Length: 492
Image 1 (cartoon, rainbow, N blue to C red):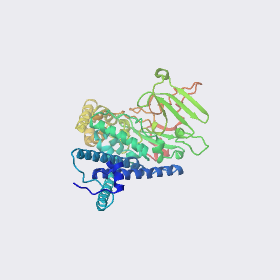
Image 2: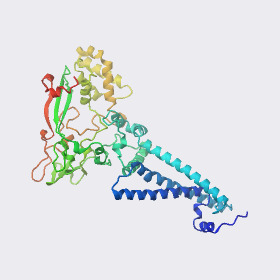
Image 3: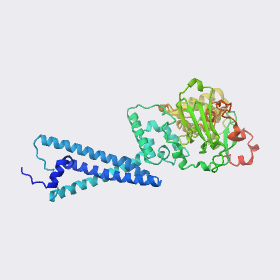
Image 4: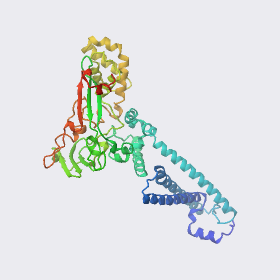
């Protein structure tokens, strides 16, 4: 078969880069690679310009640059390799290729138009798919539903949290490409774990690779506005026969960094940029803290716990930030005494049923949720009241259905047997109460503020209550004796 002589330029191209346009497959791949490289070079120039003027990049642009364009470039390269392999097989079989390109003339123009049109279609398809895929993988639905079994506990807790209208990625990833890429790489590993049923139950917390809070939390919560004090009122129902209501009220010294040059005070002393606190925890949950370093304009002070010698150099060093205290800002798991106090405070449980507060908490601890949670709770309450409070059984039976409905919601919203999540699996470090509502000896604030972490000159990290709050009332049962400013905020 005779072929039309190629032009000098065509022969020059074939001699040097024949593989890049030998057939329509390699031609398409070449166009994709060329477009991707040109856009990457343009993005590099834009990145350099932004860095020169101190301007932040757009996260959506970063997503395209760091994920979509490299994907297009790799796709183009794969097409070139596939096309080259196809050509070699044809040449080995003695087939004269009709897809070779002669530069110049009508056939060349037609093939350029065809390849260009295919490249445009491919780019539109890649861009559309990448953009939609990006948004879907960033959606709350994706985080909660795709890995349903794994994320069910966190998802249920999220939906009742103060941040329920904030997308997961706002806190877990934040703006910019760097952490987006890290999160997606980590996500791929987690997806493989789910598909192979190779993941930990429960999901470990805290997340040790979580982005620093200053890059996420502080985009909404401004530390320089953490000022003054705040009244905190907790309404309780005592575990006695009459379900006696009581109130605890404290004035929390929020404090913070009021303005440059003025020392921070109160609880948010820790977020003053002039104060850095580093600590060494020897357990995965960061609850056993054996060493603390306080670095302020006055100098550096190192505090050691009595257990420091036992653990030697073990543990993970970390610079303290918001998440070390506010460790459950969104995925808040309740504990029985708090959940029941709230249910009584808003009138969801009947205070006229004797002993209900105490026995409701008891069955929440004893019953394991499942397909028959309501039946199990009903039976447990009937057994207890029949044997221990028979005089109050009729009062219970009169409100059994709504009572069990409330208890079922509490239990199924916090205990997930399939993920080994039970009461206290994910403790909240705000405050210092244990799971029964009593003072904790080592949790929350008391991980450091326990009067045991001591410096070389005898200074300790204080456990003084007045450093953080002033107590106005503590489980006060005489509601009428409360100050007016406390009574004004009660549900009752």
